[in-house]
Amino acid sequence: MSDEQRPRLRDLLRPRPVSTDRTVTTEAEEAVPLPLRITAGYAWRLLLIAAVVAGFIWIVIQLKLLVIPLMVGILITALLWPAFEWMLRHRFPRWLAVAISILGTIAIVSTLLWLVIWQIRAQLPDVQARTGAAVEQFRQFLLDGPLHLTEKQIQGYIDQAFELVNEQAQLLLNGALAVGTTAAHVVTGAVLSLFILICLLADGAGIWRWTLRLFPRKARPAADSAAHNGWSTIVNYARTQLLVAAIDAVGIGTGAALLGVPLALPVAVLVFLGSFIPIVGAVVTGAIAVLLALVYNGPWIALAMLIVVLGVQQLEGHVLQPILMGSAVKVHPLAVVLVVAGGSMIGGIPGALFAVPLAAFVNVAAVTVSTGSWRTGDQPDADLIWSTVPRQRRRRNR
Image (cartoon, rainbow, N blue to C red; front, side):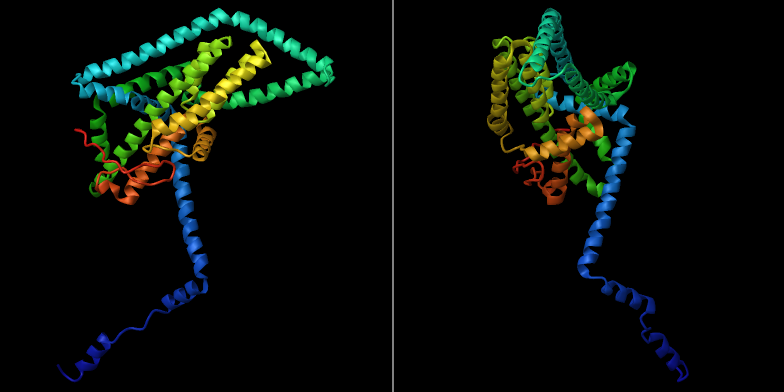
């Protein structure tokens, strides 16, 4: 190499000075306090997560005619899963297990509806007459009693009460009609839910295998374990809620029948359905039973009915839930109330119904992935909304 070429080589190998723009950027970053930078980092990430969740909720609302029947089908599948799985373990053909599960459910629901309609038709005229007499007696008490209200004041209070009831009823109807605004939509949703139920029972594992292929290959083991843990939690929740709802319905319905409260069977069915909305449903349906006793039987029977309702609810909250749920599935009452309230605000009655199982699934699935328990197949040991004890998940043939 010549002497003329050496200076040029030294120039090429010489380190280049740091860019002035980078120096300015570093100085600007250092001028911002570290706590503020950390707060800003958390803030924009939380805003991004909130935007994604809001977008997902908006899509769900737009597709409610499909989403709600799908959720109904999944929840009914979880309710039927223990009996369906028992039949499969005892060598029932799958098609026979599916037929027994669906036809048995339809038979039970049809029998309950028939009994409810029969009792309502038999006792409704008497209830209407006694209710009218009770209302008139209460009106006279307001006029002649210590309050000395006038007809105009009473009518004003009645108008305010009706306005409040109409507002709440409109809110409930909006939620109840979230499946659709016409009878055709309701029938379509029911048929779609039945079809989804049949597909999930007949080939749920195959549907999940196809869904799992949508995930990246490296993420499939974690997604599979998270989904199975979440599904186990929903099945446990549904099974326990079914048993608790049945005990609540039998307890309150029997108490109403023994106290002579009319429409005891419809009240029991209403309590059974309401119990699937934890805490809130039991309170509302119990209040209806007490109100019916107050109007028809008077204050003392209403007080006795209130004692029965509170006793059954205390039995549920302090004995049934801890024993039946055990350490496998626990939910804090505050979390339940907040989740149910948020679900009802977003989706009305369907939102309140699906809020708790959906939150349970998301919680267990997220904890399964974050704790790495998917590598061992154990249930995650974490306490966010639901508290689970490590339990080896049974490997089913899928």
